[in-house]
Image (tube, rainbow, N blue to C red; front, side):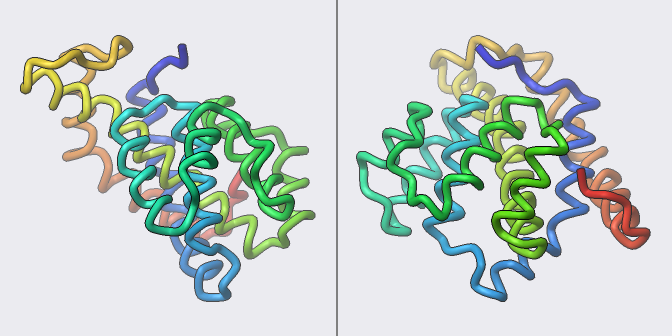
Length: 191
């Protein structure tokens, strides 16, 4: 079972997202990221991170975007054979990104850029980082909600972890996002 992210990893994930937010907007403005493509990426990362809260939310969004139930079920089961060929490299990169705890190989990144071009690859990276942060927060918040409703929380989580993530969200997230935005102004490498 995949481990949960540490507090320092949550900071880095938030910082990284701050660095790539603008690329999501650029790629979407150029019509390089359709809603179905985006949801395939979101579901692939969510499957690796095993976030029940995000699985539920993105299943609904994927259905609304036009994905069929079988493809959604396959993606949430780690099966990628039904993905359109032109989107497969991005979905596989997304899985690799999540599986490597947000530290993909340089070769994998280079392949993504070669396959989609710089603008789309950066947008894809932004989408991956967005859902990674969503999963990072969704697991403890979902678990805390389950505790309050007297349901079974995620076995990887604890009340202490859930409260620490709330603290990070309130006090550290704004700093990490600003830090990421400032780093973007100095064109630091994204990977």
